[in-house]
Every structure is written in C-alpha cells, then in structure tokens.
Image (cartoon, rainbow, N blue to C red):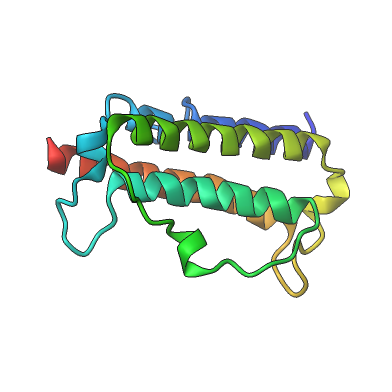
Length: 153
C-alpha cells in the first residue's frame, strides 16, 4: 500500500466510519436534524451546523492547495455564516460536506506522491502534514459534534 493510499484510507475512516477512537464525522451527524444542528447549547461555542460548514471549508482549502492554489482564508470562509436554518438548508450543508470530502479524496488519488513532501503554500507545511491535518480536524470536530448533540438532546 502506498502512502497516498494510506492517507485515503485514514481520510475515509475519520469521515465515514471505522476509526478506532469512536464515531467519525458522518456517524456523529447521523440523526441530527436542522433544529438540533442550529442550536447553540454552549453560548460561546459553534453550533453543529457551523462546525459542519467549517469542516467542509477546510477539506476544500486543502484540496485547492493540493492543486497548487495559493490564497488567504478569510474569516467568512473559515466559519461560513448559517443564514437559513430549515431542513432543506441543513440537508444541503451535509451534502456540501460530503461533496467536499469526495472532491478531496479524488484530488489525493490523482496527486503525485511528491506533493506529500512539498509545502502546499510557500513557507507552509507539506502536503503530508496538511492531509493528516484534515484527518485530525475531522476527528476533533466529530468529538465536538457528539458532545453538542448530547447537549441539545
């Protein structure tokens, strides 16, 4: 198995399931509806909805960096605002997250192994570090989603 294939497997485990630590992102989101996703049980914390959009953002950022794009990530892109809070908007947010994940997986599949050792942005961390960062990011936020889901129940 190549390093690229190992990273793809870990991306899948952290996002879809099969992670040894506990629930992956989609497992944590299972059964969450728009009302629960929009709730803010901890005033200073982000909602499940905001976290869902934030995870999608960083999958997109790393994919774009893997393709050679260099850009700043403004606050409104990092934590996109939630404007509509109906069930259709929530299902769209989850679908967007899944699409961002699939696009990242495809970008990883097509990336040359040399991208793992190269900084993805000038002066930045390597592709290897950023892709593992996405995995860690998924798991970190999956834990938050689980706790927020329990707090809103």
